Length: 267
Image 1 (tube, rainbow, N blue to C red):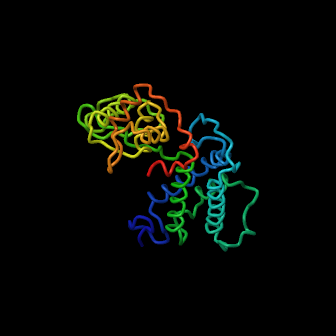
Image 2 (cartoon, rainbow, N blue to C red; image 1 turned 120 degrees about the vertical axis):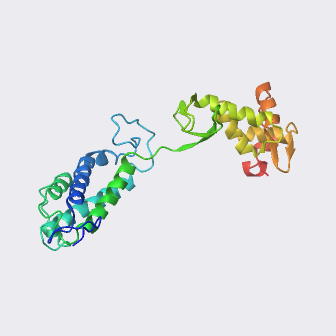
């Protein structure tokens, strides 16, 4: 016979090899450890990051709990008790056989140490299911950081990416460490010194704000309507916006522009 997970040969009566059985047990034990952080992460006012020792308090959302975590806990609970029934050799759908004296974490630990973990017929299927739940749990507790391009490396011209809270970035090619704000300013400088660089009001305002020069889209639209910007069919030049942004040009809106939707100003 072959292992249902990796295909390695196994002895008669076994469905998982020794390595896969140990890996299966380790996943169950890891999930049992993650039950408490998952319950804590139900509070939607806590910043996601269940494995982090410190989590910040965010603004109160419309929904007091994270529904995605609640669904994940329900799925994990159903899978754990179904696996335990399968290991005990009873009907997997007979919920009346559940040992409800044990909580979810204890049930996962019981499954991990069960003698039939590597020998019951559906071991490969349940191992794949538990592996998928483990990945979803990791994403719920520690979501991947949103990173975006901020500019090129000063030394090798490689595009660099950074998160919203990153103050320093390291080039993956040359290893040079640079301040994220400096990279953003250098990118803005290249855009503003090249008269051929053009963009929309929203795109230009975002580029300036990211570099530390706060600029609103409506301000760019006001300057354009007053005829103070170089505008072509391709867009507004960064250089003309930069000259006004550093000159202290008044940004008060014209009376007729306040009543117009912002969508009309971008046309």
